Length: 313
Image 1 (cartoon, rainbow, N blue to C red):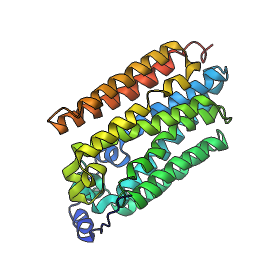
Image 2 (image 1 turned 135 degrees about the vertical axis):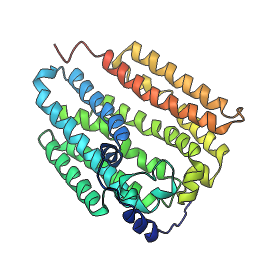
Image 3 (image 1 turned 60 degrees about the vertical axis):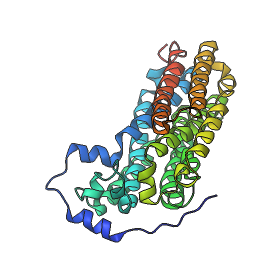
Image 4 (image 1 turned 30 degrees about the vertical axis):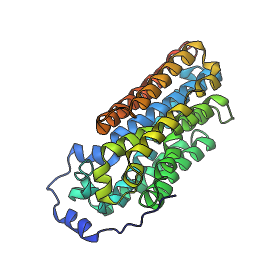
């Protein structure tokens, strides 16, 4: 593993507090909880929950209360982890354009309040999930612990493998949704977990390429910073290729899902291979990043659509 030692900057943290604004805005709250990350994770929580209803032949209305507990609890746990990430990264966030306006950097929300909110959100979220199943809580804790401790605190500033480590947290939400309905092992949520785990690496490596200069300035050893764009493009292509056989392990979802998922995988792989021939690496990285967002949305939507007849029956 490539390792980089970085030092925090107390001066930056002190400066951010001195620039405190007069009031907290809605935009500050959205930035603190990272609404985009929360929403994308909730999509997979819902997908896991929905598929569990389908394969256990359970009507949605029979589990509407569990659904609310699962969604609200997951939202709070994910938001709590994101808040703690903001709290811990306050010394490096000012060095990156996309993070320098976070409320923990501007001082609009103090570090003490951010820490308290992160802990409270997380605890309340876990408490709500306790009213579903113990397995759902364990999967939620696995994702939270990986993101806050193993990724944010331990690996993000040290290893290029930080992306792979963080991928475990992003792959946990569908397991939470499924386990809230059915705590027993099933190949479908496991397959969705593997897809989500692999999906995240090309998604975040593309983002790292787009923001390479900022990550370098902040001292974060993302793969394109340490090893360059060519190695990164190769890794992106390899990870996307690994997605190709996975739809066939989810044959229980039907032929339509297999066909659509395979088309999505082939299209993404073709785009990845194009990267070896394009001169504008940043333009290509942006194309990979946008495709990844659409990929996740379409894949989850198709999973729901092909199983839409059962949960409400």
